[in-house]
Image 1 (spheres, one colour):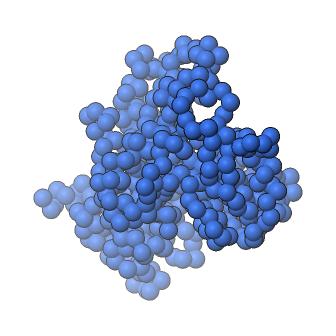
Image 2 (image 1 turned 90 degrees about the vertical axis):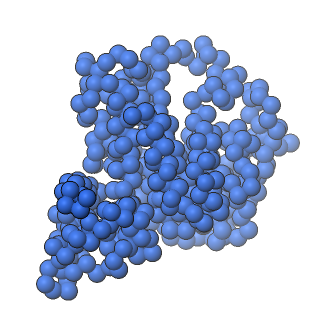
Image 3 (image 1 turned 180 degrees about the vertical axis):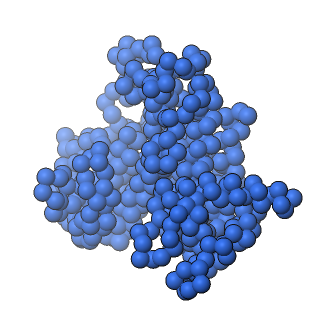
Length: 405
């Protein structure tokens, strides 16, 4: 089966969940490092990953999330590529003068272009493309925005101000604090950040910044955006304060609208969880024994589909607003209804407490198959438990299909 066919199947499942919604399209990149298997991999299609030494390839999925609930709805597109082993350096390629279409950073624009058909077919009300600091480049602001399409990016470049020597970061720091509030911040080992409930100060304003000096392509000389500056007031000892500078095409008129923008950016964490499921906690894609790069890429796309389902079920543990349609076909739901009574006990505490056909009801059943006791006094089921339950269910579903042709 062709790789494009597998990606298209993800898009088809995604657009079935989107009709009439307002959504976030969250993109990010990760590398699949296969250096541990370099001795047995076929040479065809080999490339290197971020250190320009280890064998592997890159993935760049776009996860669609309901902007009101934060629930992942599917993948609107997936990009995969390799870096040539003998790729010249940025200096040798005169990287700064290259058009965006010849740079790896074009992936951010390609995410939007690759997702367009999925959103148009689904008649989505509004889309906001969300990216981390790596996506802070000039070109997408002019290539992507159109009616009912917005961008939200975490700034990493201290851009120049129009008709002034001032810089963006200093200008934002000088704005008055519009309000403070508390927000749960997830832990991140890479950033040496512990999970905590943080007190954040919020600023917002309109900004107009200039085109980068070295840009040679034909783009407007400046862009006018809305900015939200959010900084943690009292970080734990020994940890750096959370400080996000967010740029967006959305209008921001008050502190509540600024807090909404911050929440949307926080839901970008879901794609980090997706990569953790894919590479570490459950699927361990880098441990595959396949020997062909093209076959591993296809396996990666299939594994992404499973990772999305694990994430949906884990986040939907108590979500009765979403139906099980988000994760399972009607046939699989019918099979779940057949299995469910065998997983319940005699007492009320051992019964599934959620409404049938809700995502929460489905998660309860899958978690029980994964070894969870079902008691609320026990720790809620996590990624590993849900993944075990899914594997058990898929085996049972094969038997159920044989019994119900």
